[in-house]
Amino acid sequence: MPDVARPGLRVTPALTIPAGELAWRFSRSSGPGGQGVNTADSRVELSWDVAGSATLTEAQRERLLARLTKRLVGGVLTVVASEHRAQLSNRDAARARLADVVATALAPPSPRRRPTRPTRASRERRLEAKKHRTQTKQMRRRPTE
Image (spheres, one colour):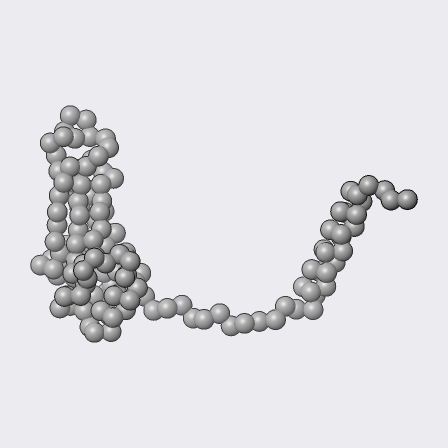
């Protein structure tokens, strides 16, 4: 849902990308559309220059550039939306997709897993299951004399 209170794209409560930094491009979309599919430019490409953005702090820029290296082309992040027949719906989908990608990349890393040892009971259950599988497979063999 677009944020109508402030112009731009709200990514997190602390970060809003100004509308002037967003570049829109429209083209014809493949898929359903009936008679208007060959005339309406309903496919939407939304681009944002991460490397040249003035709204990011240096730490945010470094984190985004590090985490989105495979998605960036020349420092520019581009998302495409063409799943709807209407251009307005695709615009909203592209805005939501870009906000989601940026918010996910800006999120702090999850805490590292603390290594733990298996409990005594779990080791015993594992060995008991191995013995049971061994017996089952031995019963499937041909009898030896």
